Structures are given as structure tokens and as C-alpha cells.
Length: 335
Ligand code: NAI
Ligand code: MG
Image (cartoon, rainbow, N blue to C red; front, side):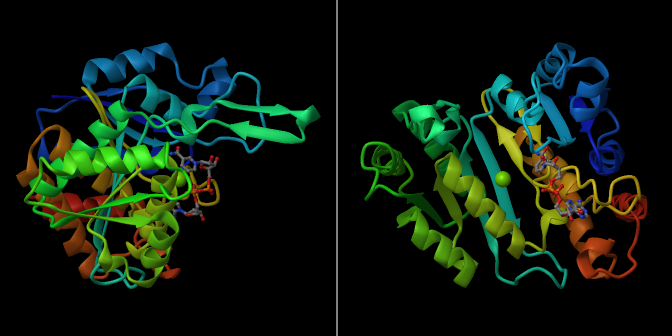
């Protein structure tokens, strides 16, 4: 089994090594390759995502990605390497779970997964201006093919994880030819999974329920943009960004990545919370390498360490354990 590790920028260089230690402890046979991507790499060589990194990722078929810094202004030749990597690896689904973790910042009773379509919708990059820049237009593309495969992903996940319900989230009342198509295809696919309940919410109502009562949700099946927004809302109930994992999956390659960014405000201090990176690695173990027993061990060790009050500084604001101390605590619990 092979893993391509891309630490990236900022705290990616701290939380990813912590997660790799956990994986090595549990799977000593794992072959780990390192590869570079990100803003620092771009500044050194003019390439944000080197071809060599893409090749290593393809060869390993599994990637653990930290985070990359992206400037908020346009830089010629630079585009976000994680967005490019998701495209190049054809990862069409982004799984973003939020479950209660024993920290004071999390909400009890929350256990949901946002299954976000990763390849189309407003993210296809077809955007242009007219009227000397006074009119902007972006194309929202929804296809039967992409809607079918993401719907199957959501229903299979529900079945595998013994979840009861898939909620289709859309805005088909205003966008019948795009979101309406997504909704229709999702209902068609649902007929093949009669053991799973299916319902639907308009995205604005879904946002209301995500704030008011997130325990209403189980699996959320939704196009790209709504998935981006709703999963960040859900992450707040899971205890915060330092605890929110994600996994991109597709045909062959899986890319695990914490939801958070490079956190330049705390980078280099050794205080970043490695939980999101460790739980993302556990998702790789569970969904890609198909080893649920090992993934349960990681999840259990994280819950146990947190329930005993081992918090990094982001959880309570007070002095906490360091990134490496937290990784030590997890490795110690894995035997
Ligand atoms: P961010 O997620 O990096 O940080 C937001 C806040 O959360 C900061 O106060 C940070 O200290 C805190 N935080 C995040 N992760 C943490 C962790 N593991 N432990 C403790 N505290 C943590 O988002 P921000 O500040 O908006 O973006 C910073 C940079 O990251 C930008 O250049 C942005 O483009 C990039 N970014 C990259 C992503 C990726 O590579 N997937 C995703 C989001 C942002
Ligand atoms: Mg986002």
C-alpha cells in the first residue's frame, strides 16, 4: 500500500507529519512518498503543482494533502494546487463528515455527512464579463452523468454506514433545468436503495435547519456550491476547523485533506490541532483502503484523548498540548 504525502504550506507541515506518524504506527507496511505543492514551492520554482507530484499521486493512488496558502489577489501563473489536484485525480465526490467529538466546542447529537459533488456546478470556471466589466456571468452546469455517480456515492455510503436517510438539497424551484435535473436523477437513483429513506430540502431551508437542529441531517446529497457552504456550517458543530476532516474520492485515486487552510497566524509554533488531518487519514483507511477496523481504532483513540481533556490551544483558547504531544497521545493509544 502506498501513500503520497503533500504537506503544502503553513500548518500543513505540522499536522500532516502528525497524521503520517499515526498511519505508520497502525500500518507499518505502508510505503510513504513525499511530494511538493503550494505557494512556497511556486515562489521557489514558478510551479504550484509540479508534474512530478501529479505522477507520484497517480502512482500511489492515495494522497494525504495538508493545505496551501493562496494569495487573495491574482498572481500570474498561480492557481490553487488542491483544486487542480482534485481535477487531475478525477475525484468526483467530496465526503465531509461532522460528528460529535468530546470537546466543549462541539454540539451533542450531530452525526452527519455532506456528500458534495466535486466536478461541476458553478465551479467549472466558465465565467466572463461584458459591458466593460459591469455585467458578470457564470455558467452553472449539472449533468445526468455526474448527478448519477454522486447520488450512488451518497446512497452506498448511507448503506455501508448503516445510516437511515439521504436528504437531497437543491434549489429546483428556481433552477428547474439544473438543480431540478440533479433532484430528479437523485430520486431515480434512490429507487435502487429502497432500504434508505429519501427526502429533500431547498438549500435555504437546509441552511436554516443546519443552524437550528443539525441532528435533523444524516446524509446530505448536494451539488458543489451548496455542499461547500453547508459543510463549513456543519464543521462549526463538530467543534471547529481544527477537527474537521474530508476525503475526495473518485475512480481510482483518493485525496484526504483537512477542511482547514494553512493558518498562517499560528504556523511554525507547533500548536496546530492535528485532529482534522488525523481523522482525514482515518477516512482514507476506511473508505479507500477498506480497513474499517483500523479506521475505528484511530477514531477511537482521538475520541479517547479528547475526552480526557487533551486539547490543543484552538479548543479552549488556554494553553494546550502541542501538535506533537497530541500525536504522541494518539500513537500511545494505538498500542
Ligand atoms: P484557515 O483554515 O487557514 O484558518 C482559519 C482560522 O482557524 C485561523 O485562525 C487558524 O489559526 C484556525 N485554524 C485552522 N486550522 C487550525 C488547526 N488545525 N489548529 C488550530 N487552529 C486552526 O483559513 P484562512 O485563514 O481563511 O486561510 C489561510 C490560508 O489558507 C489562505 O491562504 C487560504 O487560501 C488557504 N486555504 C487553503 C485551503 C486548502 O488548501 N485546502 C482551504 C482553506 C484555506
Ligand atoms: Mg470551503
